Amino acid sequence: MTVAHNPSAPFAHTIRPRHLDRLVIVYVRQSTAQQVTGNRESADLQYQLRSRAVEYGWADSRVVVIDDDQGMSGQSIEGRPGFPRLLAEVSLGHVGIVFGREMSRLARSGKDWRQLLDLCAIFGVLLADADGVSDPTDPSDRLLLGPCGMMSEAELHVLRSRLPQGKRDTAHRGEAFGFVPTGSVRTADGGVALDPDEQARSAVRLMFEKFAELGSARQAHAYLVRNGIVLGVRSASGPDKGQLTWRRPRLGAVDDRLRHPFYAGAYVYGRCVADPTRRTGGKCGRGRPGLRSGSA
Image 1 (tube, rainbow, N blue to C red):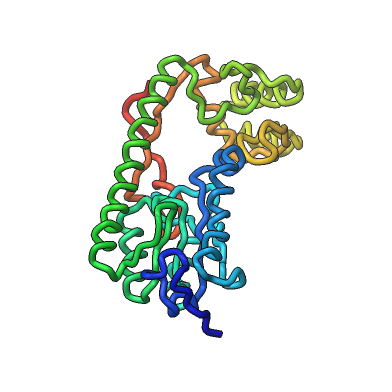
Image 2: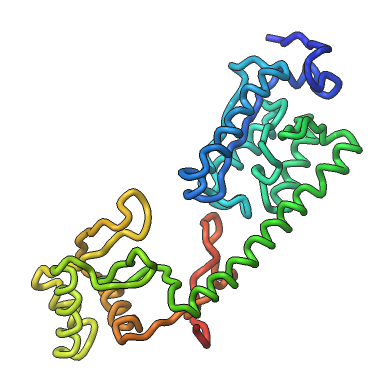
């Protein structure tokens, strides 16, 4: 079905019948899980772009919302199933326009932004945000759209450069904890205290006693498994955050706990650094951590 072009509709000089005959993609993304749950206003504004598309002339049935990347950073395409889906729909010629509240919602990587921009230019797809509609095939619009990726990437770089300094300042106060070891819990003031569950404390105590008695982590682990001893672990994130779960001890976990400086009364921070050369293709993360020479 061909949609009639309305010359009085917003941006009628840019939005043509060939665009109205195709789908609208409304791309919705928040950078972190905390933003998804705590910043509902931003999400609502992004979902409202659906009505903006209808106002511009598209039928509501032609609007597709892609919100698979909620809680995902835009710094890379990895780990974002929604963005490859968007690129695929554009490449198949199904899309007439892509809506995003801000261009930084679509991508904060210059490489990913250029890929989207080039595909939109090839397949005649418009880009729209809160400021209006742009045509990547128009030289003037392309001149404005090009730097958007660089600006978003630079903004992300500034934001990320502030985080390490903040973490170092927190570490110097002895308050930076990625997670607390088994048998301990975080307190309301940001400190660490013994787990209130007596069984959880006793299991850790027994693990150290058997290590001292038997002389190795492997033998201590074998004793725990042989006698059905489980360790109490509190979830650090997710819906069960803070809840105590009981797990059968693994040798690696026992060895890590026996080596943890916290049990010796020492506070450390920054023992490991990510190694980008060890990244696994198609997976999130910055690579397997490697040991650092120093720590805070």
